Image (cartoon, rainbow, N blue to C red; front, side):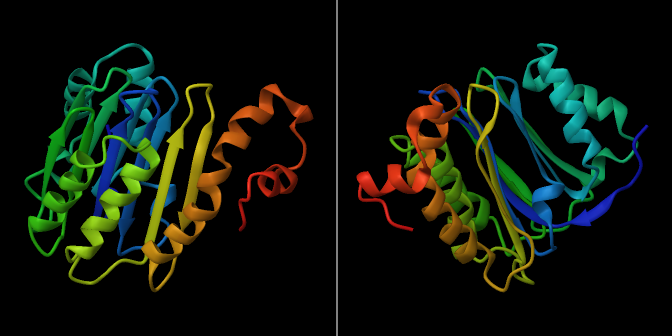
Amino acid sequence: MFELGTETHTFTAIGRCPRTGRLGVAVTTSEIGTGGRAPHVKANVGAVGTQAYTDPRLGILALELLELGYPAGRVLSELEASDLHIEWRQLGIVDRWGHTAVRTGANNSEWAGHKTGDGWITMGNYLVGAQVVDSMASAMETSLEEDIETRLMRAIDAGTNAGGQPNGQRAAAIIVHENEGFSIVNLRVDDHDEPMKELWRLFNKLHPLVPYYRERPDNPAIGRVSEWAAKRGITS
């Protein structure tokens, strides 16, 4: 059985790209180092967010069950049955097919809640109000033409701009896994006065290079990333 874990008041976007199948999580919170606790992603398996008075082991278990072929809803039922403190948790799951399951426990700090759409979840707790989750949901709904990593970034940015948490944010992270089995975006800001601003800075440097890092495993003759970027007019 799982025991009561670390207090983490957080808002998160989780999603699957309907075109490519990429899976990812973006998260920001008032505590440091959230990227090491809240997001859990595995290529071709699923994406999971664990937060509130979180137990990160629930994310590990969720991925194990998803890998066995359990759909998101069944995984959430198993987590509920495994955790003595489920009402203290907030959990979101998107599986390899884009099915969603999410739960906001009764003991989450207000305001707490979630929304779901086609292959995505937005959720948060200890927020200034429902507009935070609503703004994240709107960002996910209105960015379907973009890749999943950009949609997730836009979502938590929208939540930040809608007021976020009463005590502000200190950390932010994004993890997106490529279908080939590795992360194509894995960025963390662990302790910063403006974590979203810093996460965008890192994201905007990395994102244009994603095609290079996708190709290099199968084409080691591709050359150095600096040369590849220069040929395409990409500057850091």
